[in-house]
View 1 (tube, one colour):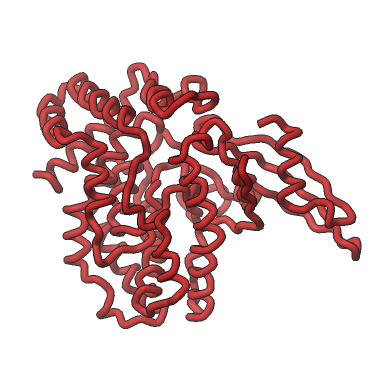
View 2: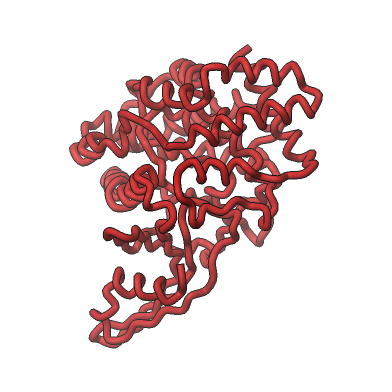
Length: 405
């Protein structure tokens, strides 16, 4: 989107004419490899109302991508994220405030405004880079310190849903009536992409001299990966469901460190809530472990899941619920065996995005149909990338040794 259009939309969305003074300084955009389905621009907004008091905001402004919004599936994705910031987080924050929790879930950028018309959807968020948050290097797997913080953060996020459901919160129950969240049907129009990924992953496993894993992977995917994902998301309706982020890859997490020391974690934030939905917490947990852990960390999956469940129980209790009413660890493990395939399948399909060079990253601009979207996403040139191969083999090996043995 051209800068003059961006400025025009910002002025319209923030009602610039209502202020005595209103100025916009555009400050750049993220790297090409940091987002595909939306456009984003960083901006400094200065405004003053009638009392002449100057206010300054550093914002990350997220725009629906014009080339994608013409497809219904992506229009719904953009609506979904608007719903998350406008309604879901408001209910979550209200519940935490009422329960007076000491350390609430706050791993979401503050949303200052949203805007939507027939042409565009816009979300105005705090620029987390200005607050000291940074992305983790996508080429490197996250260590146990990062994974434990992720488990603790998602435990809090999931516990809020369980608490609201337990207490029959009317606002939350109304959100669950929204088809965007429950998604009785799911069709991302990406079957061609997922099918191509299965072929690509199988080929890479054979090239890595792991014919044993390639054979098992092919058999697992015989039904078709899109059908497998649909069976989990649509046909399965676990009673103990929560709001799940559903998009847990490296570039959707930002971290804050003390003195820029990557071993001294202070905080984290979760970004990109376009496919949030209501399902098993394992949808997130498996996605995290298979997408961002390497062999040493993923082999600690049992310990990490136990840690997650302990943190879930603790925060669930702090939200005013009886600890005995949270689902037991045995149920979490049942979910793990049934639903971890969702995270595993997505991790396999998107693993190469962690290693693609910026100049080789796919573009979703100016595409005519969903088949073009699938084709562009499928063609990623990694060359001879041993780091990718090691990560891929590690997660496939873990899945067949521990879940589908």
